Amino acid sequence: MIRELEDQHNLEKNELAPYATHNIGTRGRRYAEKVHPFRTDFQRDRDRILHSHAFRRLEYKTQVFLSGRGDHYRTRLTHTIEVAAIARTIARSLNLNEDLTETISLAHDLGHTPFGHAGERALHRIMYDYGGFDHNLQALRIVDELEIKYPEYDGINLTWEVRAGLIKHRIDYAGKRAELDGCVLPCMPSLEAQVADVADDLTYYGHDVDDGLDSGLITPEMMEEVELWRMVSAKAAALGLKKGEERFAAFSVRCLIDAMVGDVIRSSNAKIERLAPESAEEVGNLKEKLISFSDRFESLTKELRDFLYHNLYFHPELKKLNELSFNRMDHMFRIYLEHPEFMGETAQSRIGKDGVARAAADYIAGMTDRFAENEYRRLTGERREG
Image (cartoon, rainbow, N blue to C red; front, side):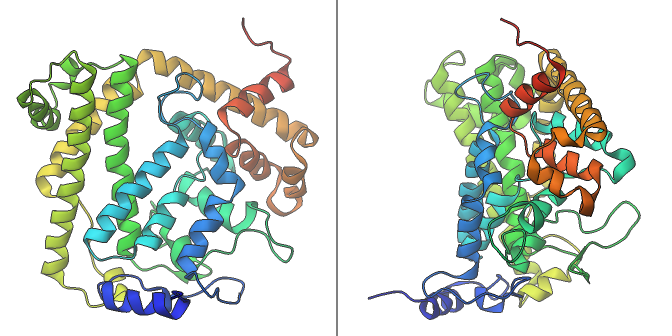
């Protein structure tokens, strides 16, 4: 028996919570398309992201440690896959739309620059006088404009719900509400977008601890000052694992992620039951997010995040790489402003519409770590050491 589109819509109607986002209620795409006989709109969006150039480039973009510095360290791609997996678990447990949740998760980092968070901070500084740079809005720009797949229009023509889910900040610093296609967005994102957001946070808490321990920049002894780590590592110790063993760290990280996921599910379910929204539209008009850690875990994860900032993200060894990243990106940007012909043909073709500064920012943001290193050397004539 073939499961056709109508069957999938009926499954959603019977299985999803009333406050979940249903495919049948999508606001559609910017450019109308025929429906697919076997795939829902959100499933098609997921596949378009997986087949995009921007998604494939995530394999060679830094998470924390520069791409190529070690075979086991996370990249943007492996981070994204982990976020999608955890987000699906949370969405399934809360009877939300797994396909939409997964799609937003897979797309959430498409706009990231080379060289990790340091690269984003650098490009925002570089673009300060030209409108700034934000990786969330860049992800939307990629799926709306920069991916070239269809003969009639730019972008990959995703549904409104996926595109809205990529706009993380609904109110800017001036108090202005975010808009999409000229329409003011609801105060709160969909529950599926909220799940993707929380899954992103807890995933990098867990895997940055894992990568930090692998690198030796942080140690299990250092982690003892973090209450959440003491809680989860006690389970490893109870099994007879020793702190210096690889199994101890690996099992503790596993318990760390499991504890955070479990807390999000239980805390979110309690909020949903308390506020009892009856539709996805009602969720958007609430005054608070429903998908979140409990108050206790919010405090625990904040302590963990602060520990990572002080001991890993701004570690002297990484700080040197961060400064090098800014200098190289800034140098390339200045060269492109004066010599836009040095950019790729697609980037050059957008100068008339977007201006040379934004075209250069798009070009740099789309680079992998490896391409950025090679491009910098090509532009400056600098030789690789060794």
